[in-house]
Amino acid sequence: MPGVDPKLVLDPAAVPGPDSVRITVVDEESAHPLLDTTGDEGLTTVPHLVMREIVAFCVLVGAIALLSYLVDAPLRDVANPSKTPNPAKAPWYFLGLQELLHYYPPIISGIVLPGLAVLALMVVPYFDINIHRPAFLSGAHFRRHLAAVWAVGIVLIVGFLVSSAAGPVWPLIGTTLFLLMVISVPLVAGRERGPGRWIATRSLPFWIFTWFVLSAVVLTVIGTFFRGPGWSFVMPWEGGFHV
Amino acid sequence: MPASRSDRLGGSPVPSGDRPSGFFRRVHRSVFRHSLQDTPRNRSLAVFMNFFLHFHPVKVRRRAIMFRQTFYLGGLTAATFLLLIASGMLLMLYYHPSVPRAYADMKDLAYVVPMGLFIRNFHRWAAHAMVALAFLHMLRVFYAGAYRPPREFNWVVGVNLLIGTLLLSYTGYLLPWDQLSYWGVMVGTNILKSVPVVGEKIQFLLLGGKSVGANALIRFYVLHCVFLPLVLTLGIGVHIWRIRKDGGLFLADEARVDGVGSPAGTMEDD
Ligand code: HEM
Image 1 (cartoon, rainbow over the protein chains, first blue to last red):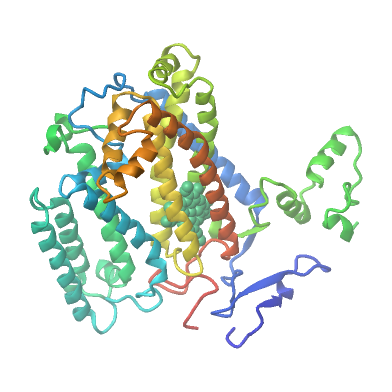
Image 2: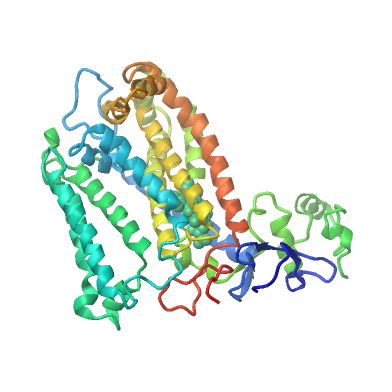
């Protein structure tokens, strides 16, 4: 509704009964109501949503109860400050960071990198890069944009090859290479249909976010399943696994 | 008989719609303020006359409540949080945050307390589930494109909820006081020392000493059982309130084939 100025409008369409009025809040910048414009069918919360919630809740309780019945929470010996286990691992959700700790000094891997990741996560929706515009690989500058992606990727890979005193950071090199391959699929498969089309229509934030998520998952899986004494690389069945 | 204006506004304890007969109906009325008759009006009243349901709108869009839209991940994260509060309160009945009593309490839970091991298992696995579900929920929100305006602030609230969830889980990890807890927390808190200038001070503040000991246990206990649950409860409240203020759940514009359509109500290019 461009041209509509008022910040509050009385919206007779939203009136639930003959003698009441609902106020629609209008987003000033876009002058569009924040209320539904999809024209989707409305269902009453009771029972449609509440029934679904109850069922989902029961399934969740059942699943956790079953797991608790089958598998016991770990309990090792009493804490002993003079007996360091090898390896000493943090809980699984921090093992990605601990894996990074193997490559970079604690200030970098434990503070700076996770801090930057959290910051990147928070500002993602505030940068209008390629959010509303057509995906950056589906336009006319497809090849130029893809070349730029490769340039950034190669800088990252070279960085991960040389920046750590402990050798190449294979988990991140692998992740970066893998995504470079995926994003280049439209070069061979074309952009008209199938996977090539799907890949070419993803936005830039999609690729950045996916790079972060995949890196975190790969680091976490390696830290959880493939690290043994002295943080050496072992197979899960050789003692790498740890809850 | 049409409802009068006064009872729609909650003015009359006994809406004039249908007359209560009998004690049960009077009590039901006093609690729910509407009858059990299945009418559209009562379906609405069931939501906004109910403290526990009023964070929902009276009506929701069909697509928004389908499983494939959200996989219910946010709701399940909130549900695990409630389950953790319930099972955590039971654990608190038996647990002493002191060295070495804390560890002995774990043994008691396993061998002495009826259902003790089950309660501990339940709390443990629910905690892991909450971390995983919050993470998966974040992925769902991102890949649906629901993080974009006007929901960008709720995304930021969400990121903080994820951090809060991790901290809650990590502070709980120390409480059993076994080798896993002790060294797991040691590894993490040693990183703090590497922060220039203030690092050692922050670590001292968190642990109540230079390394993990009895003081750290009681600090983590207070953070885990009081401070962080309160913060997270408040945060989740804000998060769910914002969903409604931001116009309900994001539904992709079906007209767009690429799945990256604008959120409802914020189309830029029309
Ligand atoms: C303690 C953790 C969390 C709880 C209990 C929670 C709860 C919820 C619930 C119940 C919903 C409704 C829709 C759904 O189930 O998907 C929701 C939506 C949403 N959440 Fe969360 N959430 C949490 C963490 C997060 C995180 C980590 C993020 C992102 C970083 C996030 C961002 C959002 C956004 C943007 C929406 C709106 C989605 C839409 O409109 O489709 N939340 N949250």
